[in-house]
Amino acid sequence: GIQVEQSPPDLILQEGANSTLRCNFSDSVNNLQWFHQNPWGQLINLFYIPSGTKQNGRLSATTVATERYSLLYISSSQTTDSGVYFCAVERGPGNTPLVFGKGTRLSVIA
Amino acid sequence: NAGVTQTPKFRILKIGQSMTLQCTQDMNHNYMYWYRQDPGMGLKLIYYSVGAGITDKGEVPNGYNVSRSTTEDFPLRLELAAPSQTSVYFCASSRRQGTGELFFGEGSRLTVL
Image 1 (cartoon, rainbow over the protein chains, first blue to last red):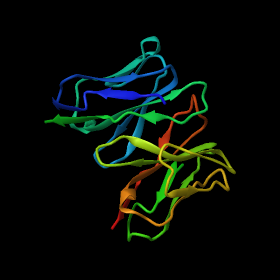
Image 2 (cartoon, helix red, strand yellow; image 1 turned 30 degrees about the vertical axis):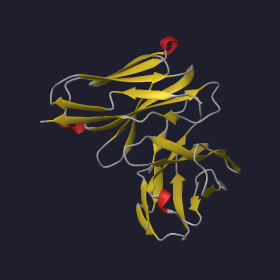
Image 3 (cartoon, rainbow over the protein chains, first blue to last red; image 1 turned 30 degrees about the horizontal axis):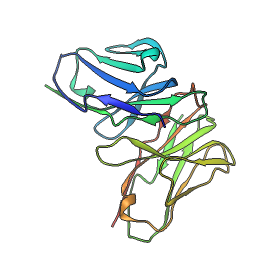
Image 4 (cartoon, rainbow over the protein chains, first blue to last red; image 1 turned 180 degrees about the horizontal axis):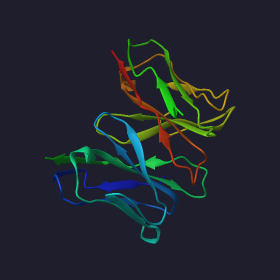
């Protein structure tokens, strides 16, 4: 099956710093989503981004499908950004569920 | 809208007991999923359903059963609970696969002793 690798596995930032999280996948995909799991365990969908670039406030994401990677950018990080960020992909043609990476654990320190 | 609702949020079971985790969604989504998350790990798919009356196995289905009698409900049954089933269970739904954003419930933390 498709493999999803996220890096780095852990990241510690000072509040106000910027960061880039990476997701590599082993095959072509027609669905890629980024999720944030907050310290209370709640999973929130951040982006649906099988290709291209999207921005939502301080967060943005870019997927280069031809090179099989996606990047999540967090600017001016805040302590509320702490948690685990998951990338999940679905291989085409659209009949299989999402496969999750192991996540990047982000800690933002005040 | 409540979104995806899971019950119970916490449960402790003894080895060999059985229980059902309930999941319901009010978004009229066709697709529903059960994932488990072990400490420090990503999510692994247990079972999924593409519509009422249709279910399929995911990556780790052993020890679990599901049913989908209505669009709204997708219960997960644990038979003969084992310590290896200690985990956090997430139910999720999407309008469709391929282009559907995934929405999660708040999770159910299960401990088997």
